[in-house]
Length: 484
Image 1 (cartoon, rainbow, N blue to C red):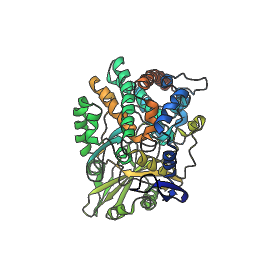
Image 2 (cartoon, one colour; image 1 turned 90 degrees about the vertical axis):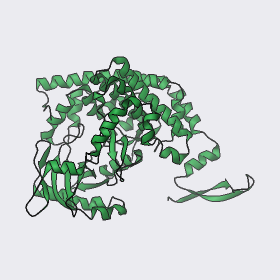
Image 3 (cartoon, rainbow, N blue to C red; image 1 turned 135 degrees about the horizontal axis):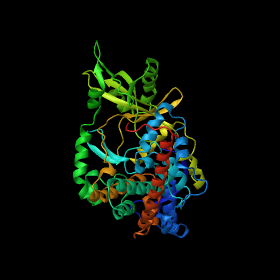
Image 4 (cartoon, rainbow, N blue to C red; image 1 turned 180 degrees about the horizontal axis):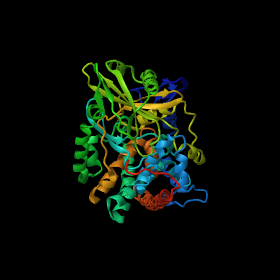
């Protein structure tokens, strides 16, 4: 625990308030103890913020004169990526407006920095669009549903995640063929679920709130019963999405035993021995970032091969490797070693009064941000460096499954919105006091209406940005490779 500071007087148990036991103040507890001593209410503090930032003000969005055009924003976000892969990234972003949003977290951060903020900070995902929620396996073989992408995670305004989620739901709903009322309602109800869940967490004991909303209760909590069939299908698929199945499709046996990856360009390709050795060698430093109880497990595996694998939409062009390990029976475990670039939100945080401290290692930032937001994280989550570049390390195909929000039936879009809104509130409540955010959000639907209006307006802006990118691709201004 941290250092010892001032002494705080607390009532002696069983003796009422007349006598006190003097206990040391311990760093980390000081703020809560001081708050209790003064009798201040986080709920009242959050409520008071409505005077400075009315909840209705969150409907605001108007692009300013300095906003970069869509093509410039895409080109800027491609800097530092592997040049030969950026056409794949552009092609994926050009596919639909929702796909464009997925790849443009930095552009949206620019826009959000010019919208009203309460100043309440939390560990935010930074890219909380509707496709970044999903299923993954826990250490005991069960499935957990939560946020599952943290490349952009930082300490920042909680509103940014809520608004990005809401706007993405409008775009996904439009792509799914839902009518405009349904799309707007999805944004409205995602915000409402966030608000109601935060109020619930604010009322619970701290430990209960930390672990709240067990996944088996999530559907009932968010009244997402129309989504049950889809979740069951995704769960069944996720259970089969394992290292073993990936290795069976992507590797072949070699003489003398063992296996190696097989080229499947452009998504999977073998790399020179020198590069493979550098990636494999980096796993020694990775082991030092894990809990010591994981080391005997990994000690039962041997590294057999390394390959390069293209992933994601926003991540295309970053360096990402898969490492094949086999145990004594030849059973595989595949690790992903993925480059960790600085968060795309970082340049925009200082403009709104958030100044994260220096980041010693970007992979560490991603891993610790993920652990701060999830109830259960990958047991083998860690970080390392390959040469001078920072990387995160995690299990690959750890029974991961995801709902495609753009392929949902119209009557499922709203259910999915409520579920993701609740999950986002739970994630934020790990680092921000839920009483403070709940005090601001309140009981009525004023915030829900405002964010829904913002979401529709921003979805329209994103469609215009996407159209601009498509025109640039057709004119040859930027190269794009479709269908990869």
